[in-house]
Image (cartoon, rainbow, N blue to C red; front, side):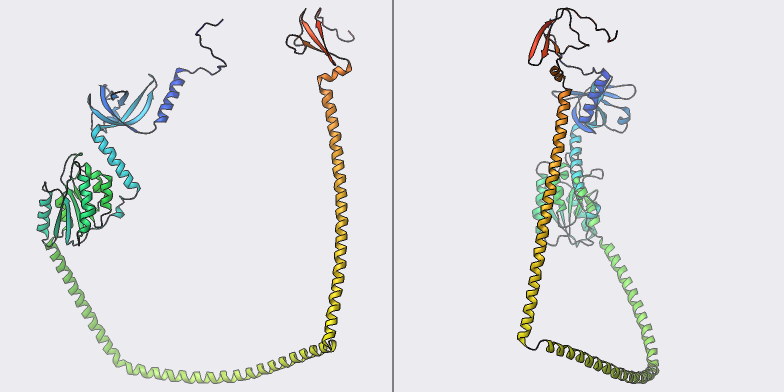
Amino acid sequence: MKEEGAPVFQNDIRPAFTVTELTEGIGLAIEGAFPGFLHVEGEISNLKESSSGHAYFTLKDSTAQIRGVFFRGHRRNDRFLPREGEQVLATGRLNLYRPRGEYQIVVHAMEPAGIGKFFLEFRRVQRRLQEEGLLLPGRKRALPFFPSRIALVTSLQGAVVWDFIRIAGLRNRSVSVVILPVRVQGEGAVEDIVEAFTRRIPRLAGLDAVVLARGGGSVEDLWPFNNEYLARTLLACPVPVVSAVGHETNITIADLVSDLRVATPSEAAEKLVPHAGELLRRIRAFRERLEHHLVGEVRRAGIGLFQARDRMFVWPHQLSRYHQRRERGDRRLTAFMERKKHTLSIEGHKIRRRIQESVFSLLRHKRGLLEDVVRRIRTPYALYVRKRDRREAIQDRLRETIGVVLCRSEKNQRLWEEALVRRMRDRLALHEANHRGLTERLRAATPFSALEKGFAILFHAHDRTLVSPTRLPHFGELLLARIPGFEIGLEVRSIEPRKAEGG
């Protein structure tokens, strides 16, 4: 008897796994479920650094934890070194450490959690704009050569406004600057800047360019300029946009979508506002080039005038030669026309004679045909009788032909039907003969056909299986003998091997 509570395995024929095989399967499943690089945020704990330079730690949150390793080769390329208890954003691959059967994350890069979030959002917005083709260099517009009115979108709290106005005034006082004050950091900054670009800027008449400016700051301070909605607003601006946000090392989404990115507001003023002295120098250079060009044109016109005057003295002689050439041409043309006229008159006379002969011959032929028809058809009634007889003859021939065709078709149809019936009968008789033969063979092949010849079939009484040389009955066992219509119970009294015939 089986013990109570013992596990019961029915038809369990699966092979047993080795620990290595099972661990390898689990590792493939884990690594296949999380392919490629993934980002994990958590708190550093149990940080240990080995003598080889590898860092081993646990990354945890309030309810779970995962082991991690930061190899020396990856740490060389990473400037951030984590400390115990810090919140970090780790980027790496998930794998299974086979010797211990523990899954872990192999870190390739690590940074503080807050900055990491900003960076991931920055990359997401940048990737989306790139996929739409909004960051291509060919999309950027050229700045106006000499703008007369510039809008400056910035805060009034910093020195950005005064630096821009001072540089623009030193370079060219004829350029007007319109200040649009907005918040450039904190809550509501994005809404202020979007409102300035969508409502206030379109109402400014004669505007040539817009400068979006802000001083340097932390990642959190500059974060409003990484907003996707603000980026699309800058792209929809009707005039070129210059971005002067942060320092040289700070790159924002606004820098990427603007038509020009500069490091400081002062540089934006230098790029947009042309220097008055430089303009005067270029105007003088243009005037000198224009004077040189006009002097050259006057010199070339004088030379052309002298050449035309020289040609005027030669003109009467050329005109006389032209008159002589024209008179010779007229004489040759008149002689050629006379010869052609005589030739054409001769050929025309021959053609008229041939046409007359052809027409007279055709008329004679048609007249003969007409006279022949008149001879054959003397009156309209004779023509009617002739047409009627011809129609009746055609109808008689048509009826005879239709009758012959129908008779032949009926005869052919009867022949085809008779042949088809004969073939069907022969095929049916052949199948019936084959069926009878197969039935006889099947009946003769069954083991019960031997019963009709006086034989009996023996079965074991307890399971009704056939008695065969491979399964002989034992002494005293009950058997069943089957004959046609009956089953007879037998008891085994002896089992003796049968001697071979003739032995």
